[in-house]
Picture 1 (cartoon, helix red, strand yellow):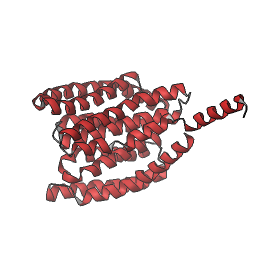
Picture 2: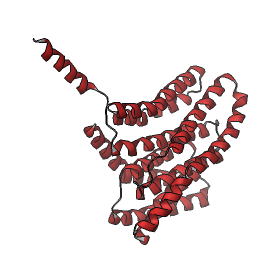
Picture 3: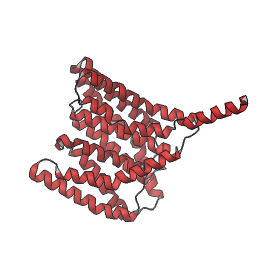
Picture 4: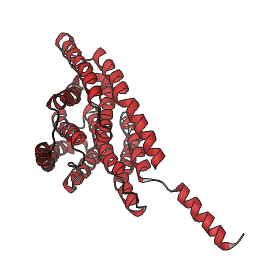
Length: 301
């Protein structure tokens, strides 16, 4: 075989096995349960592996961007997927750390509520709310702080209290980083003609996300349902727009879920059956569409 043809075939094979940036981003999402599950084993070695794997997954947030620029695959879908993966990463990890007692709930609730609000606004004003640099720093600090908490639990658990103080600083920084988004939304409102009724109905999805976050301490061992539902929320808000008709149909279902949650808390001071309904609704509303979007992303590479 001529040398030139052989080199061309080798180059073609390398191109075929090249890993796409979007694949790495999706891998970060799907592998996320592993480091969280290792924390629940509550052994020294399991925590070490959890910290190592979590650090690797967090580092892929940098790797996928580098690959996208090197392969000249900086795409609109990639730009939308990356912040979605970051929000899912922080939400799942931080709520796991709250359940295990590493973090207090109040600070984490304020952090995640910021992410829920920004994701909701970005679903309406995608072009206006592109990720800014200060928000990238915010995400990096969130990942680093989670790693520090796990690391300190291995060497000096009594120092974790200082992480709690740092968490308050991170809350302030996170909300400050959202101020430019709020300013852009105000300008977008003045430029775009929105259906006020449809926008009001879409607020119910935000209300459901915030409600699930607030009732997290009442969920007990069913807390993974809240993590799953919030993850689907971020995925859907970040990558898909809901049609007006579907939004109206969903608003009634969301309102019903909110009423059921309120009734269950009022009578039994905990949530159980309503969480299973939330899971079914989330799988129906967001899960199937999310899987379809994942398939389309993988096909596009």
